[in-house]
Length: 264
Figure 1 (cartoon, rainbow, N blue to C red):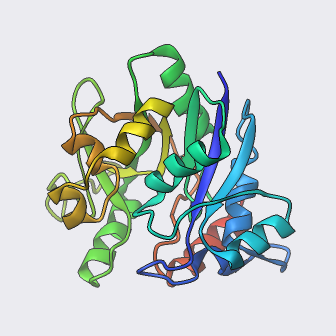
Figure 2 (cartoon, one colour):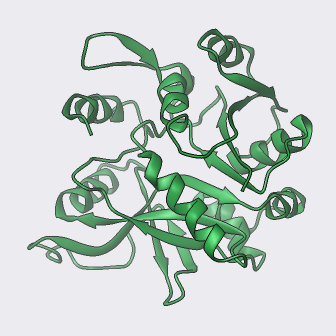
C-alpha cells in the first residue's frame, strides 16, 4: 500500500491564531514549534512513503522547510483540513492508495494510531474513511466535562454502531452518562482522535460536496462524510498509559508539555 501523510496547517485558527508556530518546551528545555513536533510524530509511522505539510501560509511554509519538511502550498479558502488534504493530493500529483490526514495539533498521537487505520483499510477494502477513537477513563472524561463547564470547546466525542461505523461526532460529551457514571474506571464515552485515513477517491468526492447543516453547527469536518452517506469506520485504539490531547486552546500547551515530560 502506498501511504502518504499530509499535515494540514493554517495560521488563521479561530480558537488559536498562529497555532502551528506555537512553541512548546520539551523535557530537555529546548523549544520546538507545534508543526515540527507533529511532523516528527508523523515521521515515526511505519511504511509511509512521505510526510508533507500542506499550508496556505508563507510563515508556516518557511518554518516547515527550515526543519526539512516537504511543503505543498494550498489555497486560503480551503474550509478545513480534509479539503486541504484533497487539494494537496491533487496539486502534488501524489500516487497513493491511502492518504493520512495527520493533524498538526496532535504531537502526542502515537504512530500506532495511524498504523491501525492502515491495517483496518488493508483488511477491509470497503472502508473509504477511517479514524481512531479512544475510550475515556474517568480522568479523561472529567477533563472533557471541565472544558464544557468552562465554556471551552475541547476534545470531540464519537458514537458508533456494531459495525463500528460512526453514528455521530460531537463537541458535546456524548453519549449522555450522568455525572456519576464511570467512577470505577473506564467509561462508555469515546474521545475522537483527530486523525483520518482516506482512499483518494473519497477525498475527491469530499471536495465536491457542499458542507451540510451538522458540519456547520458542530464545526466538525468529518460530519460532511456522514451527511453525504459515506461511512466513517471508527477504529478503537488504546492509550496504554499515555495521555492524548490535541492543542485546541492556549491552555492545552501546559497539558501537552506535561505529557511530553512523562514520556511514552
